[in-house]
Length: 286
Image 1: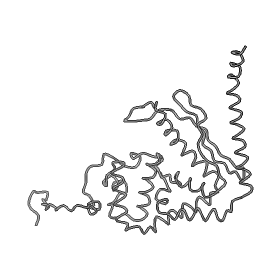
Image 2: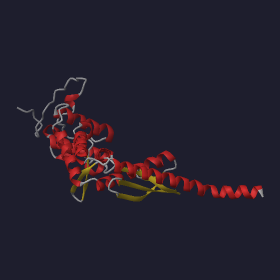
Image 3: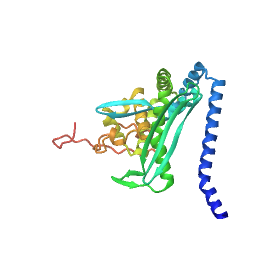
Image 4: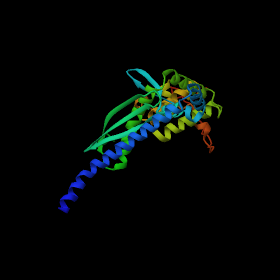
């Protein structure tokens, strides 16, 4: 009888634990809603906090993404900007929850919930435990790799949920403020910033200066502030996984004459070799 009683208690234990967990989560949600009602957001202060955050050059540089689609360019707020919007808007719960993990795939949910107005957006999605690497489909078995894959896939859904909650005019003002911050960035001359951007493309994505100049259609020496902003948006898009380097740049671009922008920023000075020009006929130039 004691053994039968122990088995019965063990069979009932998971249900009891599940009910206790659900009850605790319900009480936490009630507490969040109560606090949101007690301390409602001040829309004007929230907007000002968002605009002040967008004045930081470090945020403005990663605030936008863009990627090509059907011959056009799609541009929008990045994941980092959506996080700043949610944090400064206030009384907003957002995140990712893994609902179920099956063999070879995970079912997760991205959500954003305005606790003050009870407006909620959520997206349920399935993530296969596999990754494309070197033209082959690689199956993931390491729990850490699976977690990072689910988090990366869910981040884009969280951004969409957050942007669906926060008013569109606030988002547009934040984007405009980030663009003004980039155009008025006084951290250094435009020439230095473009050179640093080209260096980052080469080191992190193996995109050379020739590929960038081919994509824009002119030498880097002719880049303006708007070209620099577009270059940063492309870098952010690739970094966030919204696009791939091949979507923007042709890796088969032949080696052509460099504009000399990157070379002017090398720390070690190397003597230049004299160039000998020869015309088509093979005779020395005049």
